[in-house]
Length: 152
Image 1: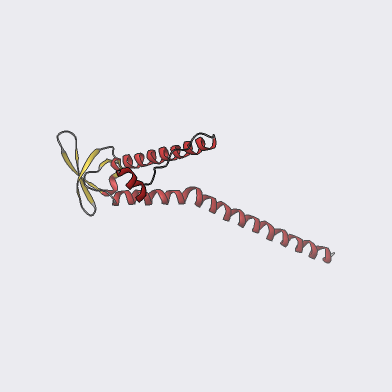
Image 2: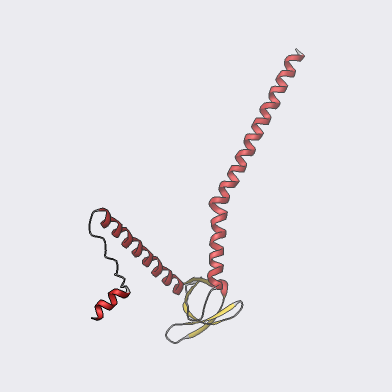
């Protein structure tokens, strides 16, 4: 009888170990998923905002967290002065109050559009070569002999 109880006790401790290991692995996986889906993207967003606020320049058009649109006139260490409206009202704001830099966003959009156009052009030129259409002519490089012939 005591032998049966000892064997059951040994099996129960093994089951408890397996159960606790499974629970521990589940918790670790849950924390890893939360980190990659929530914490890491938030830190990345905060870093981008911090870089944007640090790279403000005089003349940039900005939008504040409160929705005020203005042009940067003066930049100091922790605050900026902006002009708003037709009457050029000046306001002093903390840097953390800047939400977006419209000037940088417009430049970024233009760069993205130019890159897309270049990629589309490259794709079209490859497609035309595959279809058997004439490849675009490369500019002719003139040698010294060709230059002499042209001058005659």
